[in-house]
Structures are given as structure tokens and as C-alpha cells.
Image 1 (cartoon, one colour):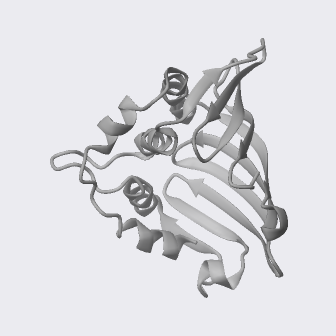
Image 2 (cartoon, helix red, strand yellow; image 1 turned 90 degrees about the vertical axis):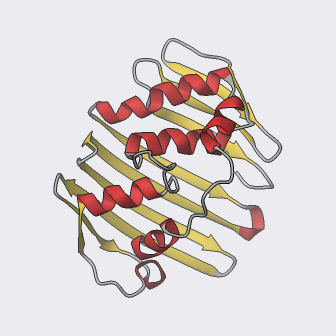
Length: 209
């Protein structure tokens, strides 16, 4: 996936308007609270196991599991397995990622269409990885510095959910519950009350769950 990502990162067209200002004005108050707190996870140490299920009806389905251990933006591990189907086509694989502060290592059993023939394992300098992540937010404004991982996450959340209604409903002592909806999707997401780590989420839209 990395060669594809690197190619896409340099093809981002510059915005004709200030996307940060436009997105900020469209944010619901509850979403502003989420954006203000979730990126702070990057300043804490934590681990989490996550499972993502995709249901596209007759068109396809998939399951992805992720085990994360996070120390900081330079030191983390991720173990990923996935099993996706689209019609009669299937895609299965595993990926193991390790960041040791200087290098990012990728190993696993990945389909050839994802690696484009690149042999595994691979080793990438963390400085290059940082550049790729920062480029995901598009080129910086003239005179501004390129964003880091935390600011890229903040801007990504703003752009992804701008124009979406967010309301806090059903929060308990152990979990914050938010419901959201826009023209294309609706769903809910929960976070722990002591740490803003997502504990569950459901999204529905265009027949997909």
C-alpha cells in the first residue's frame, strides 16, 4: 500500500479556499469536543484491540482486526489481519508494523496487488514516514509549516465530519456516547470517560454498514 500512498500524496491539488476555516465553521459543538481531545491520545501510552466489520449486502463484506501498542509517535506496533470479499473476489492477508524511533518496519503476508511486487519485509526511515503522513493533509499554506501527525489527524476529522450533526446522548459513567448524521450516513460512536479512546462505533450509509 505504501507505494500507492506515496504516489497519491503528491497529487493532492491545492485548495481554492481555506479548508480549515470552512470546516471549522461547519463543526457541531460536540464534534469540536471530540477533535479537541482525541488527538491528545498521541501524548499518552496505551494499547487497544479493534475489530472492524463491513457489510455491503450482496456486493461484499469484510473483517479487519488491529492490535495496537502505542508509546509515542515514534514507537509503536500494529498487528493487522484482514479478510475482504467483493463479489467472487477475495483478499486476505496480515501485516505487522514496528516503529523503533528511527525506522518503520513492515512485514506480513500481503496480496501482490497491495505490495506491487515489493518484497517484504521493508524498512523505511521514520522521517520519510512523517513526510508521507503530513502530505496526507495536502500542501501547507504559503509560509506555513507542514503539519505533523497530530495536526493531520485534527484536520482529517474536521474535513471528514464537517456538516455532520453530532449530539451527545446516553452517556454513562464509563462511556461517552455520540450520535451523528448527515445526508450520506448516520451512526454512533463511544469513547471511554477516563481516556478518549474509541470503544465502539457504527456507521450506516448507502446500504453499507
